[in-house]
Image (cartoon, rainbow, N blue to C red; front, side):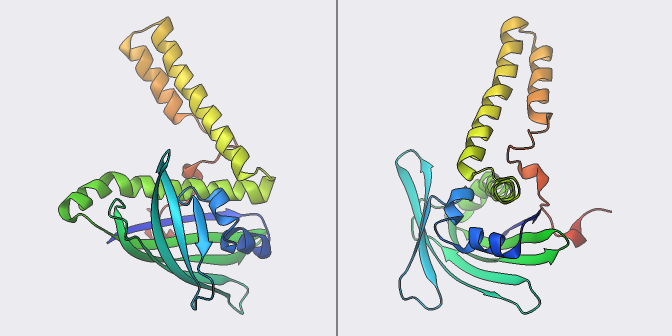
Length: 218
């Protein structure tokens, strides 16, 4: 079973974080893993279907069952089971949770989930690339949510900022190649393009914790 963990702290009220993450209309706006989420009417516990665009005009569908109830201590946990019958999906089934922990000035928002791949050994090989990419997308989305709730940068605008920054970083490398062309110079430009910190208003996966606190090296 593959495992993914992501955590961030959002300077916003519990009500705002809860609404942005539990409302099926708001959730796909900031979470890059979902193109749309459709609740199944009358289902108990609450069920939903989802679709993710992997290429223009190509969607992979899946399903999920979740329940989200606030706890008396002020925090909340939302449990989830999910899967996909679509043979094109590398994920066959999985489960996880979202946890909301009140902290001074905001909410500690974290997720942990595991999933089982399909396609046998080939699926496990694909997951060597898919797993880190999926984890990165989760972290990038969490920071996108944080920017929305803290600074009012809508998910749509954050996506535009990301695209513009990628273009500028690519332009740096292209300019080095056109004006100089030496491999060493192009390599330095590429390292700068990768290593330069993102603009404060551009979502970045690197701002999120990617392992539980107790597993972090001291």
